[in-house]
Amino acid sequence: MPNTLNTAKAELKRAITDAISKAVSNGELIDAPIPEFVIETPADRSNGDLATNAAMAGARVFRTAPVKIAQAITNNLDLKNTFFERCEVAGPGFINFFYSKRYYASVLRDVEGEGENYGSSDYGKGKKVMVEFVSANPTGPMHMGNARGGALGDCLAAVLDKAGYNSYREFYVNDAGNQIEKFACSLEARYLQLYRDDIIFPEDGYQGSDITDHAKAYAEQFGDKLVDVPSEERKQALVDYALPKNIAKMQSDMAKYKINYDKWFFESELHKSGEVQKVVDLLTEKGLTYEKEGAIWYKNKDVCTKLLLGQGKTQDYIDKLELKDDVLIRQNGNPTYFTADIAYHKNKFDRGFETLIDIWGADHHGHVMRMKGAMDAIGCDSDEFKVVLMQLVKLVSGGQVVKMSKRTGKAIQLGDLLEEVPVDSARFLFNTREANTQMDFDLDIAVQQDNQNPVYYVQYAHARICSIIKALKKDGIEQRSCADEELFLLTQPEEKELINHIAEFSDEIVAAAKDYDPTKITRYVTRTATLFHKFYNACRVKCDDEGLMQARLTLCIAVKTVIKNVLDMFNIDCPETM
Image 1 (cartoon, rainbow, N blue to C red):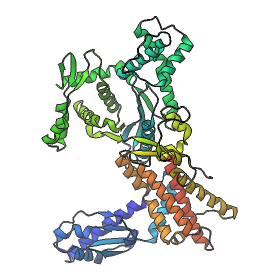
Image 2: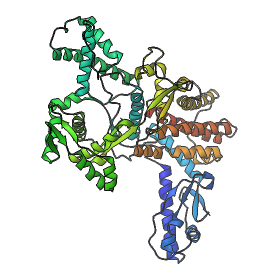
Image 3: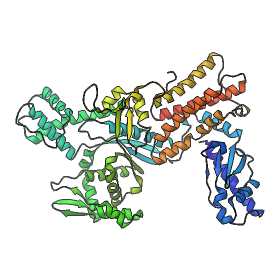
Image 4: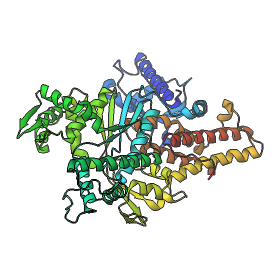
């Protein structure tokens, strides 16, 4: 996959290394190993397109001032057949390099040649990565945290694919365990209350109106047939009726949100297959369990202490964490959620996934170390278990926090949000703030069709380019392939700034994949739109110089390609008219 920026950096590194070797050979520098140095983009591009600290890095080994080393390097530097036209020494010894016209032309050739694949790379080498996200409790409706987690997880998986990984999206359905028992007891109480006045609702039951709605719906369809049957039979019947409806609603909401999972994995499968018990047996074989008060406990404290010591943490640091052991099997013989969670993550690794990424709410922070320790304990690589912690989101309208839906008068659910806010807007806006920061989701901005709404702003830039192309066609001007000499005409600051930004697309994708942070890409594409508008306002596309006009049209189409590639990647519409 062509990448002019990376090629330029590689060329420059070779040129600098060769220059140092020549300076050593002719006696300008003493004979010493060439030190490691970096090549980076300066904060202020007026100082150069790329800069190196090679002179400062070599001060100690060459036993001379960085400025003199920089001069020795530039004296012996050969930039012929590279993407650079000149260099200059600045400050204490930085060397700044400036791109040649050939560089800018080559970037546009990359976009033209790669088209919809532009920005892709093989960085991930096809590594199988599972992204598990949302995984909301199926006993009730999905909330705003699920809305943020859905957009974050889905777009993260898309970024990983673009960076050359093989990503897989999964939703874990907790259809077993204590929460299902609580769900059953809550449904039972609400159902019986329809027929009897002496029924007390469980103190820890689910209070949501959805529980009452399910009970009433069952009664309307089947009447009082469950009133006189044994409690367990009644609860099972009610769960069998209500749970599939909740899961179907989840799947419907996710589909409406443009999220398509590769698999909806049911916790009950783990119990039926015996995988949960196998994890307990495995930990027992390794001497990591013990019995106490009729329950089976896991030596979490010992395992996590070992893991933390291996990470270089001190014993004092570990003591302050107040680590505790965990119950695997309760006194009643039922496994805990933690046990099933270990089995589920082992199942993921057993299915061949090399890296596991979970999107969790920030309130699960304390669970991260427990799970990492458990992965090591069962023989999996804890370093390949990654967790993205996501902070709370608040809905805001008119500067005030909104908690209730105007339509229903109840707490806002994901389904309510998707009825009030365009899906594209929600997906984009939820990815404008890093997961580890609290977020105010502004409902007023989300529904606006103007530049205050970031996704509209980006979509408008794409539509504007389409409009430019149509207007030129109307005047009989078709875009054609430009000769290098024509692309060399793109010398205005706004043109060069825009091309430099386009050149960074693939690196931005890789950076987002490394940091598990798709917000880097929403910021990147928003900046793309800004730079395009800046270019368009400064440089007339339709002009008397036909060669320059074609070059600028080529640049417009390159921007259009980049914007479309981002929006397509994030499953957001890319309109040609607005």
